Amino acid sequence: MPRKSRHNKKNISNQDEQWQQAWQSPDQMGMQKKQILLNSINDRIDNRRRQKKQLFFIGMSAAAAIVMAIFFKMPGIDATGNANAWQELASADSAKKIQLEDGSVVWLAPYSTVKVYADFTKKRSTILAKGSAFFSVAKDAEHPFTIGVNQQMVTVVGTAFTINKLDSVDLQLTVKEGKVALNNPSGNLLLTAGQQVITSQAKTGVVEITEPGAADWWLQQQMRLQNIRLEELINRIEKYYQVKLMYGTIDKNKKVTLTWDLTISLQDNLTVLNTLTGLNIH
Image 1: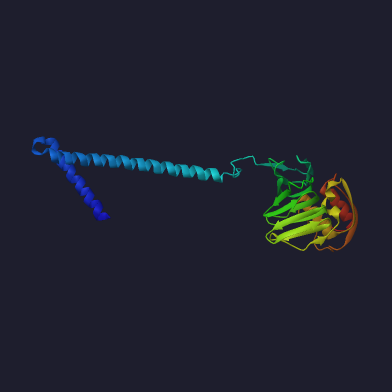
Image 2: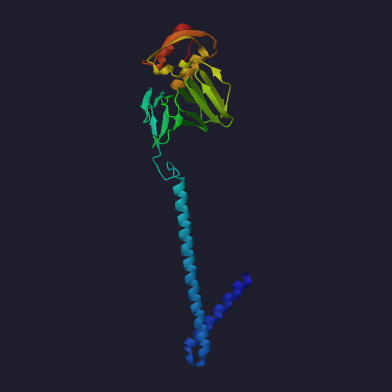
């Protein structure tokens, strides 16, 4: 390749010299040779034009590719280009009730977020993005209700249950009534009223039997908890308020009976609990 390049440059240089001679002394060069030189100059001009066009189209193609790459990577745009495919709903420091178009109801625990598909009447799809939510789903056999949590999917037709997003991978599912299907990398699992499951590394764990009321205990202003194990109570508190309690060494199997008042602060409720147990849970 280098030899060919030097050869081309040498030919061009000779042609330029010959053309200069023809310009200065037109009578000393025949018409045939002049025509050959003229054709070579025209060819060089055409080649340069083609190269410029090629560079232009290459540049335009590259620019178009960059624009397309930016477009498809922009957050908030789905496959159809709709930036408003999901409506985000969130709660502050107290529970929040959300009435959906199909008659279903979602109660968000404090500091929780759910996303609802914009065209919900055609596609009953939601995403639990943060915290805990209790779903009371209206029955519609033709349009299953789905909740995406991390990389797992919960599907129902009509039932009531609570989902708690534990972290970026796992969840806790507690069914109050009806049947709920959980789908994740470990397969499909059907849970019924009074059953609860916690996943580990996105795989379904052991199904536990629990009180159906454990799913929505926090929807009442005052909840009377009869002989509840400390471990279960602490678990409920931490998930509902999204806090990590400190309590040192305690007997987690110890049972207590108390009224949990959701109209007062967490600290005031903990004061009542500590008075009853003699512990320092904070």
